[in-house]
Length: 88
Image (cartoon, rainbow, N blue to C red):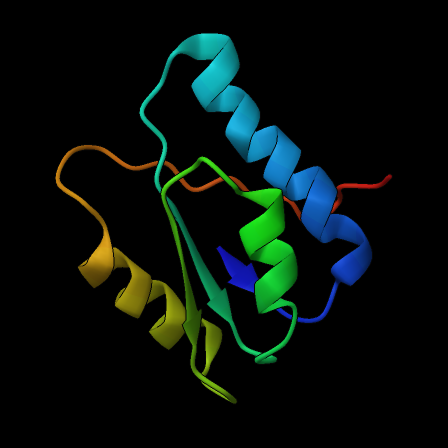
């Protein structure tokens, strides 16, 4: 997931992503490209108990961020869901 300074949404996004693991029994691994280099502690709290990585690559074009995350992803199928319109 590409992320840039939306601290008010971190907890809500974390709940949604963790919910896939709890509600559907799916194996979840969350990869976040934090282009702003901020809110790392917030992600750690929001995704406690869910395998996750926060990659800090300041000022990297979005597609390069996605490519880096794809190289880091575990084996198997992965899904990308756009959360840009999420509101709390």
